[in-house]
Image 1 (cartoon, one colour):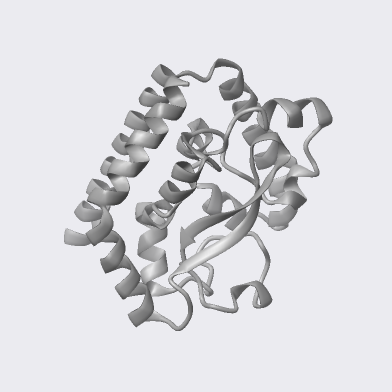
Image 2: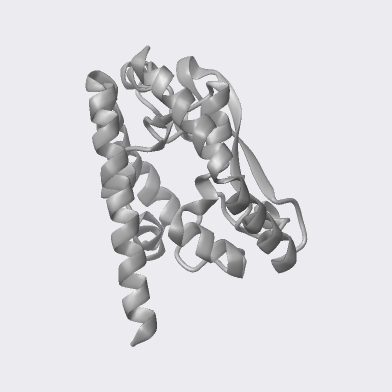
Length: 208
């Protein structure tokens, strides 16, 4: 219960405070490329229930027909604004609405698409789906260079299914078994630190 109350209060306050940021991002997306501001995709939530996740659109409108489901390295389908949103993780901000609605939590295993959840071993699937999926989690911190790993693979789909997905599952199970408000606060702090450090590093590189 404390975790859910924290999710509700934090997401509601963040949505109010970040409203101007949402508006600016929406305007940038519309000016950069044709298509909707938000990207919606079916994901698997707590208890195996399906929901449509919200993200700011970072790819061209007909991206699914132009390439694979996995986003690999410098994918040409990613728009200019989309590349910046992905790098800063601002594309994830609309998921605060999903948190408010109860589909997601601020912290929890990242929600997968049904095709990959179908690959979960039965015992692990039940444990991972026993908690709400989250905007951030330990895996997001440890596998921050996932796109780069896939780009270096001769068979990205196989690499994801046989290497990255099992690693994500192990971390998701570990999180589900010890999740608490205190652990969530630590993960949120680590996420903010990682994003701040990355932004600072990018700034240094761009000024050289």
